Every structure is written in structure tokens, then in C-alpha cells.
Length: 442
Image 1: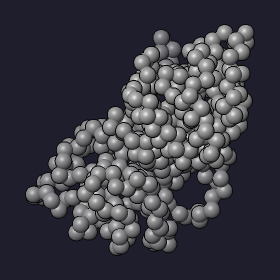
Image 2: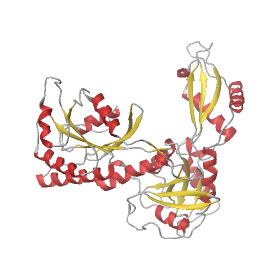
Image 3: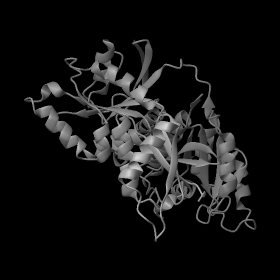
Image 4: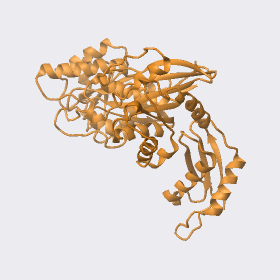
């Protein structure tokens, strides 16, 4: 079985409360909220969950003030993009101002699509006395669902409806057990498609000097050492503040999904440029998703170098964040083919590490040495005891340690435990998860 992550898109004309509802559902102030129409100029997406169902929630802003024709075209563009990408559309209208001509136009477009639609009437702050939501039956797009995004009224019922409409997140794995999914990610124009083309020895991706040529993830399979390696060449990841077009926005969302579903991510960086914050954010995104990770420093043939250049580049990179010390780096040239195929052996090694299991006896032997060398600090005069531990899952390797006071363990001690496990077992190129759980046994 594998996990798919549905996409739920929030649509509506300006100032109907899309961002407010978005923030209500994801449980935080992620989107900018303002009374001025069109404040959400950059689209937001966020992973959220309800009743055990995970999904991406998309706030499709980007509609700015202008002529009716411009506004109409912008909404129409977003509607078509959402219908092409979303598993469910939340169509928000304003219960205070009533049915608007743009609501009718958007409803007409949505009726032609195949995506299920929930018609949500926002700003119904006086429920159940206020029945203005019934006016929206005239849109012919289903039951009007009254909510107040500001107060939260009706939001629980709405979330129940949302998860009931989502596709099954568990699907039968049609691929062989030994298949490995590899996402090729990085900023635009770092040479992702050229790298994959060189790896496969053929032109299977469009290669252009124009950043962002690859819009859709493209799957290609390569057999290596009796393993099926499925490479997904993704669109370039940009900062969300630079995502302007609906098509490009959904490309970024698809890339985020590909990263989450990948076994191993190859993150390409450009050797001819300094390491950017965006490079680090892409690396961190893959690491937090639990994927194995290899940093590919591409365009290495364009660098004037000596025997110290690679070491200095790697040191500069790994000084930027502590977790980078566990991630292997390969210096390549997609143009000349230099060390490109070296990544294949590294992918197999990292996938093996991701699925590595440590016996409970080995875990507790390691724990005993950790505690002997440095016991956890006391908390308010109470002794913190870590009694035993075990590995509970793989891909990524996840360990649980049982303690009497899990919340009393300081971050520096958790890092100490993590680093000791790393020093003992390596887990090269793969994140490991450590959880501390309460055990009330005295």
C-alpha cells in the first residue's frame, strides 16, 4: 500500500473570506488576511488533517483589483487550474452581500468540471437565525453550507464533509516491492532535466535555457543492479513569493507531493553560484518529508578548481545547517557526464539505510552507554529516567524511548541522543526520527 495526498482548492471572488477560512482549517495564520480585495497575491498551500485524513489545502489568491474583464479572466484562470489539479474544490461565497455576478460565472465554470464541489457560504455569523445561505441555491451547484470563518461556526461540519469527499488515501501498490522512487528537485535552471537526460542517455525531458521549462513531473524507469529506479524530474521549486501563475503554482504543489511520496530525493544545486537560502529550504523540505537525500552539485566542469575546491565547497555547504553533515554530496557535470552515474550506487545505499532495522537489544545496549556517559539533567529536583527504547518503523528509521518525564528532556539532550545513534549506526543520507513517550512505571 502507498499513500496519496489529495488536494483541496479554495476558490471564490475577492474578499469572500478565502484566506480566513484557509487559516481556520490549517490552524494558524499562514495566509495574509486583509479587508482589501486581492490581498492574497501569492497562492498558499499547506498540509493539514482532519479525523486522520491528510490533505493539501490550497488558498488560490492572486486576483487583484482591476477592470471587470481582468477580474473575470483571473478568476476563470484559477478555476480551470483548480479543476485540473484539485481532488475537491471549496467554492466560497459571501453570505452578507448575497449572490454576485462573478459567483454565477464561477459556478457555471465549475459545473462543467469533473471535480466535486462544496458550496460554502461564509460570513454567516448569526447562525442559525440567519438563513441568507439559502439564496445560493440559485447557483445550481449543490447544498449551500453556512459557516463563519471568523468565529469557526460550522467549520467542524465542513471538515467532516471535506474528508468524506476525498479519494481513498491508501492505494494498492502496483509497483514491485524493490522499486525505488527518486525525485529530482532543485531551483529552476540548475540542470535537472539535463542531469536526468545524461543518466538515461537520451533526451527524455525538454531542456531549455528558460527557467521552469519542466512544468509537470515526468516519470522514467531505469533498471540498475536488479532494482527499478523510477526517476521523477520535477518543475523547479521557487520561493512562494515568486509564484505568479496558476500553472506554475500547481507545478510547485505537484513537486511538493512528489517529494513527500519519494524514497530518495536528489537535490541539485548550481556549482557556479553561492549556496542560496532557497537551496537550503529545498533540502530541508525533502529531509522533513522523511526521504533519503543526496546533494548533487551540478555544473562542476565550469569551476576553476584544485584538490581543495570540492572540500571547501562541501564544508561551506555543511556549515549552513547541522543535519547537512549526514547528507552525501556528489560533484557532477550533466554536460560531460562526470560522476553522474555515481548517484545510482548512492541511491541504493541510502535506500538500504532507510529500511535498516536495529534490534531492540542493540537499541538498549546503545541507550545504556548513552546514559552512562551522560544521564539526562534533573527537572525541578526530579530525576529524569529513560528506561528503554525500540525502533518502531523504517523509511525513515523511527525510534521511541520511554521515560518518566518526556516533556522535561531539553533539546540539547535530545540532540545528544540523536548524535550518538548516528555515530553508532550512521544512517547516511536518511533522516531518523526520535520520540520520547511517557512510561509511568516508577
